[in-house]
Amino acid sequence: MTSFYRNSVYLLVSLIGCFFLHGSSAAGESNEKQAGKETSITWQEKSIKYARIMSRVKWTPVADGMPKRGGHFKAGTEYTGVPYSSVKSVGRYIGFDIYLKTFLAAVQNPKSVLYTENLYGKVKNAECYYGKVCSSYTSYALQCGIWYVSRLHTPPYRNGITLVEPQSALSAKVGDIIFTPPQPGSHVEIVTEITKDKQGQVTHVRVEESRPQTTTNTNRSAKNFNRHIASRGRQLYRITDLDAWRGNNKAESFLFPNYDEDNATPDINQVLLLDLGDWVPYHKGQKVKINIMDKNDRGVKSLVIKRGDKVIEEINQPGKGVIERSFSTCGDYTAHCVMNDGSLSQACEFAVCRFDFSMPTEGVSKSKLWEIKISSDNMNLIIAHLKSDKNGYDEHNIFITEQDRKNGKIVIPANLIQDKGKMQVWMIGENKYGRLKKRQDIMVKE
Image (tube, rainbow, N blue to C red; front, side, top):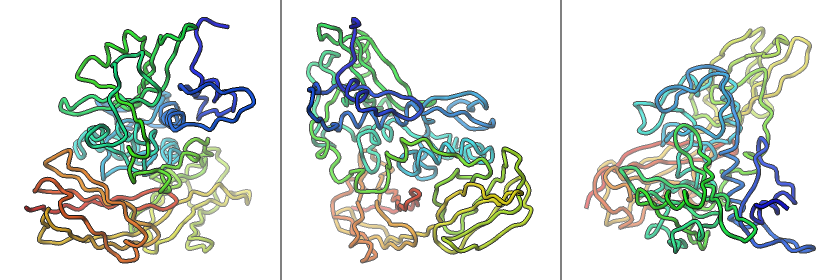
C-alpha cells in the first residue's frame, strides 16, 4: 500500500468502471463501499463527474482565429477544458445551450462560428461564440437546468447551503464551493477531490473552475488551500440539501444539460459540417452554412438536404466549400453527401425553430403582475430569464409550464422585481438539438 490514498469515491468509481471523456478519472469523498453491498452514487459524486466532462475534454483548433482573452487560440495546439466566454444572450453556453459534441464538431470546421465570430467588444467578458464561465461551470456540475450567476450561489439567495466551519482544508469536502465576492466581479469554484494520508489527515484539496482561457485544475496542499480561501474575502460553502439549493432549477426537468451525450465520445463528420457545428438548432430564416470539406478526398457527387424523410433539395457536383441556405419551414433537418462511389456520408443534423414573445409596450409596474405573450414552432419555451441592468442581484428565472404554453402567455408575479429601470428579458426555448435565446428589454416602474 502506498503512503497516500485517494478518497473512497475514487475507489468506487474505479471499481464500477466509470471512465470519463478522453480518459479523465473520477475522484471524491464518500462513505466506504462495503463488500457485497450496493451503494448508489451521491449527488456530490455526480457533480465531480459532470464537472470533469467539461474540464478534462481535449480539443485542437484546426485553424487560426478562434478568439480568447487577449488573443487567439493557436491552430494545431491541444487545449484541455472548454473555452471561457460569457456569451450571455448572444452566443451559446456549452452544456446548457448546446451539446459538448456540438462544440467539438465546430472545432473541426475551419469555417465555423468559432473562427468567424468574435464577441469581444460586443458582449462584456466574452470572446468565443461558444463557451462557459465560472457560474455556468459549477451550475452544470451541480445539476441545474440553467446557470445561477456566481453571486447568487450563496445565502441569502439560495437555500440548503451553509458556511463551512472552520474555514480550512481539514473541513473541506467534495462538492463544496468557494465563493469570491465581487471585486468588482464575483467568482465561484468547486472542490473536486480530497487527498488524505494513512492517518486520515488531509494533505491536498483539488479545486476546479472556469476562468480565462479554459478551465483550471489546481491540486493545492492543505497549507496552500488555507491560504487560498483566506485571501480576497473568499468563503467555503457546503450545499447540505441540493434540491433546496436548486429550487425548481433542476436539470432533470429539461432536455439540457444532457450528461449522457456530453460524456460520450462523438463521431465527428469528416465530409461536411455546419457553421454551428452539428446537432444544433437554428432560428427560422437564419442562414445555415454547410461546409463540404471531404477531408479524405473521396469525391462528392451531390449534397442532399432533407426535412424529416422528405428530400427538399439535392445539389449535384457541389465541390468543396460553403453552401448557404435558409429555411422558412420549421422542422428537423439533415444534410449528407452522396460520394462518387455511391456511398452516403454521415449526416449533419439540425433543427429550424421559431419562437416569439411580446411584452407591454408602455412598461410595467414592479408592484403589479404582468404578462408575456408567447408562441413557438418546433421548440418548447422553457424559461423566461429576467435580469436587471441596475442591480446584479435582481435576476430571476420564470419556469414555463405546459399550461403556460397552452395559454400562450406567462404571468410575472407582482413584487418579483426589486428595482425600477431597464430589465432584460431573455426567452429561452429548447428542442432535442439544443436551446435558442432571444432578448428584449422592458422598463420597470414603481
